[in-house]
Image (cartoon, rainbow, N blue to C red; front, side, top):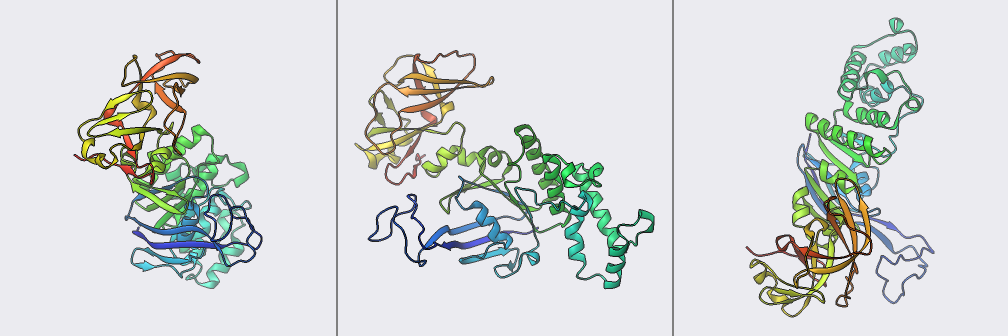
Length: 424
């Protein structure tokens, strides 16, 4: 077990000749968007200035949309990619130039990466045998190799092989796969293969576990079961774990802390509840929460009034100082679907028309359209999402009124998208 420290980590890839600049990237000087690059001097910046500390024994989750760089960061830690710049420490060791086998790190891949010709037992034991073979007597190794396919009573078993056997069976018992040790990977279900991949990593007893979307190939029910099992195992073992996922539900339920990534940068690092209750910017606010947060442009009038084409609302006193500099300006109000409720006609409430109803049994999700147009803004959205109790029956096309919970409102700067926090 060890602390993992990332200092100013960068990763760039050179663009190939003839590659088209993506519209997600700013145009180079003197060029228009979607122009062809004629040389390879330009680079794609995949990761930029990554600074992150994962405490000894912590379960850290890296989460973000596809292409944000989270898997690349994991591969840099594992040594499968070469850094463009920065430092990576595991414990008191700088591992920048160490090959993967010397980093004392175990990685669990999305596609399991099991050896198809080996049994479950041999897959779990593989890393142990490779590690032990560097110090074992070569004659002993030959004897083991020559007799390993013979009947059990005729095999040569060294003391080190006995230790490996004990470790494999201990891990199999921990993962409840003792009855699968003789099977090949093709004879296993997806969940069983995932447990074998976990067992191979656990058996090595590394300082750090790296997990790259290990549950994405499983069905919803099995994913939930395996998710709980991984968390339980990590707490039992106490091994520092870095877990990559694009699923916010996994991130919120598994991580001690979560690092939200977007476009190669870390947006915020915090506990799950801190991310939900105090997002650092609009991206984090929209990414965490299902359905995502709603955003409405409103005009602020000091000391505590906000106005919109449809409603006027007096804010709690704690917002007066925080929003003072935005007096007379348009700012972005954020409100989560669960903090909107069906109410009665009033100047402080929103008039909306129901566009879609999704009944899930324990909850109902409404997609509603604002009855009036909003202020012109690049953040304008004509639709809101609302979570209501299933007992509240609503039909498509119905006109309803929504009230906002004042204590649960968020505000964001319209230019920077950074959160504005109330002052106590």
